[in-house]
Every structure is written in structure tokens, then in C-alpha cells.
Amino acid sequence: MNRPNRTAKPARIVSKEQGNAKNSKLPVGTTVTLSVAKMTEYGYFLTDGETNILLHNNEATRTLSQGEQVEVFLYTDHDGRVAATMEEPIVQVGEFGWLEVVEIITRMGVFLNNGIKRDVLLFVDDLPMLRNEWPRLGDMILVSLKRDKEGRLLAQPVSEEVIAPNAKPGTPDMLNKVLDGTVYKIIGAGAFLLTEGEHVLFIHRDEMTEPLRLGQTVQARISYVREDGKMNGSMKARKEQLYSEDADKLMRYLENRGGSMPYTDDSAPEVIRDVFGMSKSAFKRALGKLLKERRITSAEGWTRIAASNEADKS
Image 1 (tube, one colour):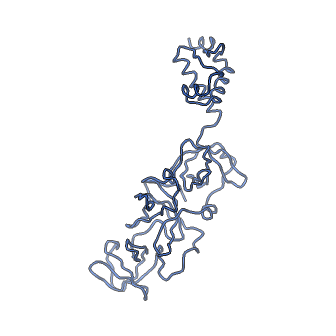
Image 2 (cartoon, helix red, strand yellow; image 1 turned 180 degrees about the vertical axis):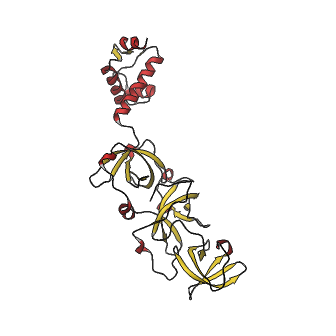
Image 3 (cartoon, helix red, strand yellow; image 1 turned 135 degrees about the vertical axis):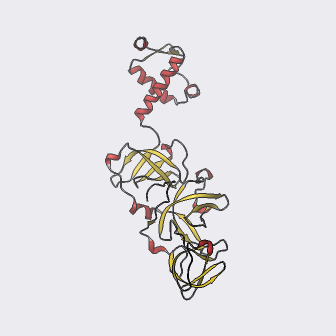
């Protein structure tokens, strides 16, 4: 369940929920061993003694012989027929793993590369309702496989029942650490990420610096570790760091204006936002920090760099 690696084929991971697959003699989405029953110019017909399945020449990784036993993966072709390939899939039914987005069709969903020639569809109904939360080409999505009512093979988002027993719990010493994580699920309140260390991290929308999409990889700070090991994260810097950054921003503004500006904690909020791009409360905190440090003075509607601060620079 490692974080997606775009330079290497994602590892297959066997789920603890393997019993969910429908019972079938030749279940689509699994690997089976069949015998070569017939050889033709366009491929091989394989059989389990009752059903014949086509293994096309371009799906065979080597030349086969009549009667030979061969291991193949079963999938559905573009006509909905069961077909076979000797190529190894990344994910089978009963497993889950990271698959890359290779095509997006708005009315249908996104197609994922499963390591074989035929891509697998993650249907539109299994994607976020908001289009800007859909994955982009090249994103990696954590999915398992399922069969629909017609027996066709589809991808589906991995459920919490599968993730929970496989994820590692957080520990108190992880508080405030910054980790890389990839979004595997989006809900109304926020997004769930799986980190490089296989920890589940929830980021509330209020703690995002930008809207997140399925399959997006971002850095987040661990803001809270619960007793059960579940963790909350934030894409925002710690308050102390934000205060310092805002204070530095005001100092640079003052320096660029020759050491003074006609803005104080009495200035209108809309003026502060237009000039500094910050809220009135953030502006007041930054002013308070600079006043406490005696780096500025404020009087009669003006804020100025303190004489002692200017002297230190000279």
C-alpha cells in the first residue's frame, strides 16, 4: 500500500476482503490455469473442459503448444466478451493497488492502466460529484476491481474496511511532522490521504490551502494524533510561522516605503486585504508582534519603523 511511484510499476497488494468476489468457474478479474484446446492463425482457444476462452496472439507472451497448461488473467473485451491475457495485471479482484489515470471521458469516468493492454474503467458514479475533484492524467488512484451486473470488469475506490486494517497507526511523536500523502477519498468535510509511510491522514477543507482532487499528492503537517492512531493534517503552516511571515511582510512593505505607512490596527478590513492580502485579524497580530519586539511604532494613524531598529541596520 505504498505511496504511488510514477517511475515504477505499483506493487500488487492482497486485500483481506478476498471472499467478496462472486463464485464462478471462470471468474473475470482473476488469474486461472487453462489448457490450450485449439490453435488458430489469430490466437489460441483455451478451455477448462467446459468453456472456451480466446487468447489472442497479441496477448500471448510466448508461443504455446496444443494441450499445454497456461496461466492467464481473464478480463472483458470491448464487446463485453471474456478474454484472456498472459500479461500480469497490477490488481485482480480481491486485491487493491495504485493505478495510473490514462484517459478521461467526462460522460463515462476515467480509465486506469492495470498493467495489461485493456484499461479498466473507474465509472463516473464512483468519482467525486465536483468535476474539479476528479483526478488528472498521470494521477495514481487507489482502487480494487469489481464485476458489474453484466459481468464486466470495473475499478472501484477502496473502502475504509479495506484500508483500516492495512494502514499503520500514527504515534504521538509524529505531531507537526510534514509528510507526503496521496488523496484516495474525498467527502464533504475534506479528504483522506495515504502517506508514504502507509498512514491514513484526514485533511479538513478548512485546513487546505487549495481544493484537493482524487489522486493528488501533497505535503501536509500532522496537526493531531488521536489515541487510536488516526491522524488529522493541515496544509497550512503553524500559527507561529504564519505570524512571523506576516510580520516580515509588513516590515518589507515599510522598508519599501521609506520606513512608514498610513495603516494601523484602526484601518478598514477591506483596505488591509487590498493592500496586504491578509485579514484584519492577521494584520493586527503581525502589528502586535512587531510592536512587542519594538521594531515599529504606531501613532496618529501611521506605522513607522522604530528608530532603534533603523539604527541597528546602519
